[in-house]
Length: 155
Image 1 (cartoon, rainbow, N blue to C red):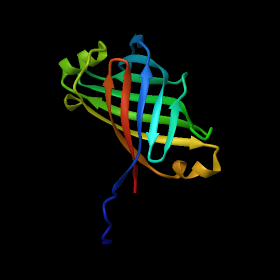
Image 2 (image 1 turned 90 degrees about the vertical axis):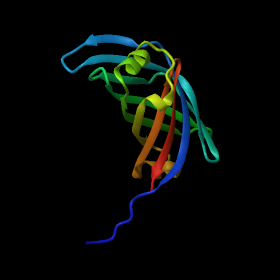
Image 3 (image 1 turned 180 degrees about the vertical axis):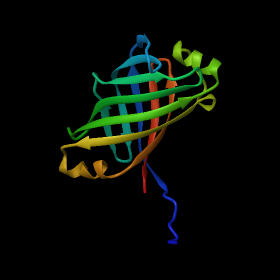
Image 4 (image 1 turned 135 degrees about the vertical axis):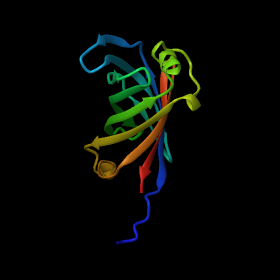
């Protein structure tokens, strides 16, 4: 058997994504369906910045009183003018009373919630093409008017 080292993580970027009030679709055959419009935001990487463009959304499926699956899709524009499409899938779990507070838009301490994500990126920029060829992981926290996340490149 080969001796394969576990992957390590390297900081990629911090994001602060402003969100609007949820659009409640309601209880569907798959769970409670919600859509959270994305209003904009900021991205800070090591030596670069970008902005989250308005117009994306976070498509949420509340599977149980403890668990939600998230699928956010939006575009960021780098300080150099390059556009990057982001698709960020996440799992958010917490005690039922904590999840209920999150769904109502109340503040919740990040330590009370398991929020992990796997963002992927697409761009037409030749200088940024490498981000489409890597895996990324992240952690996040939901605040009443925004989602803050930290993304890491998997090395």
